[in-house]
Length: 84
Image 1: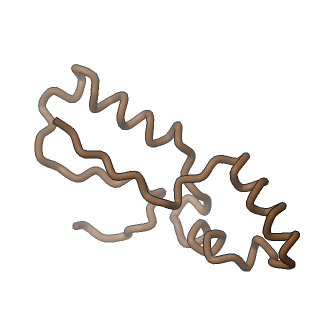
Image 2 (image 1 turned 180 degrees about the horizontal axis):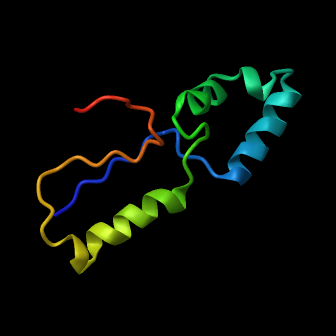
């Protein structure tokens, strides 16, 4: 059994272009938008892509993860910089 929590910051490049365009129509600069700030705060300096989370899900669903139990695995690009 697995519980997967997907953070709201998961975006695709297409989403980013759409959001940038939409914000521009409102007169808001994407670079000043809070989501862009969140991306800059990650160790990798960008938002995650759905396929990156999918890689973890595929691993956990495979036999290669048979010895993994009761753990939390962060897929956050290094946003959390401490041991939980």
